[in-house]
Amino acid sequence: MEVDKGKKELPDFKELDDRLIAEPSQGPFFEIKTNLDTPVTEDNPYISSETSNEEIEKIKRFFDDDVY
Image (cartoon, rainbow, N blue to C red; front, side):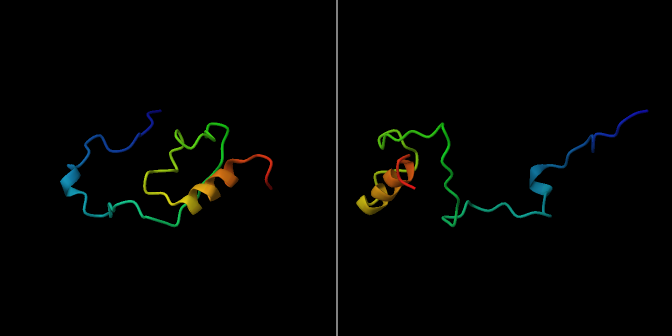
């Protein structure tokens, strides 16, 4: 028995007019703490040079394990 794994010939990317490809939104979004996240602000991808001090404090509290 042969299993059909989909179309063999894919259309050109420019011909795909049945979907919307949009820029990522600025929000809302989820921030999920994992054991891979670093608490050091210099290495933290959630903090940039444009992040306000208030936001930095919120992020620090988020990554602090002692605060519930």
